[in-house]
Image (cartoon, rainbow, N blue to C red; front, side, top):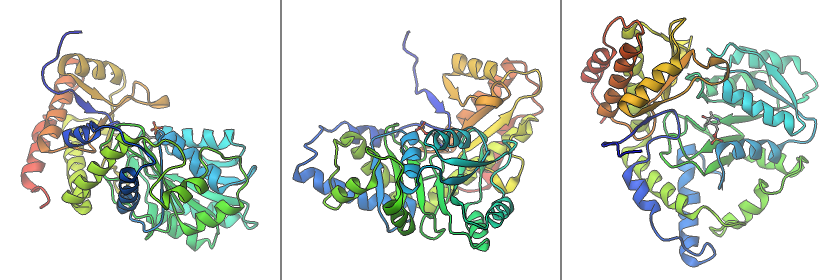
Length: 392
Ligand SMILES: *Cc1c(COP(=O)(O)O)cnc(C)c1O
């Protein structure tokens, strides 16, 4: 392959573009993970990472993809045969459900049409029906990366409380952490699952469990087999800044830098930036005359927009044209959305002009693949970005 000048546009909803500052931070020599220098790094990070989860409680950091942290969340608080309430919001919710099933949990699966988030009223109805409290956990994907639909986490918390049900609340924030407002403590979430390669602007390879007090108590009683994922030895070693195995030291250097960047920009500003870019993207999609997959405006995702292509027009052909001609990767339609949807990732290290470059690439791709384009989406997005100033 010959050199392609300029930077590849990685506009999939994760992994996201890794900023130069993070790449440089990771290029430091690996150190002794049992030495004093690591101890200081470990302490600083284990403390600092709590900020993005908005928690004062422990956050377990695994050298694993997000899938590992999904498994960890389940095996640490549940026992064989426990019933868990899960919702078919899209591909990622379905994958988490499959893990639960393979672990021997009894999944109460609420079907969905992949265009809506979790309905708090449905949560309440299922819990109210469960008078014997057989349901031990409610598992929700905050931002369904396959559909661009964000479930309303505080409203679901309220529904659980309203049903007076003791189930644990487990939330996957893998594609919302660091891009959409999220508050582990304030929303009384028991386990929050996160990963490095989306809003946190890191390469893939780290994932997280933020652990609340009620989850820690459940951990003491839970009997699903657990070894590598067991919180106990990790939390014990973390007390001194260490890990019970060799940590992914260089990714941790990157995490330190990413946390510094999020702190410098300020989380409220980070969320406002994502919301503004998401709105500009939706205006572009509407101007093109295409349909946004998310059916409920209250649930629009600020980190990814899934766009439906008109019947008879293959979304994968569009993605191929955009990749070949403009060196940009767009998100594929997953599972039952294959060919019918393409996804624009607008999360992580992104500014106005990188978003406009992205939208320009999509617009040219639409025309080149002979899709009907009503008007310029780039123009509509530019108008929005001009009118709505960048958050200070
Ligand atoms: C990306 C993603 C995952 C899967 O994480 P991996 O790192 O690929 O294992 C799970 N849930 C959501 C919401 C995601 O966006």
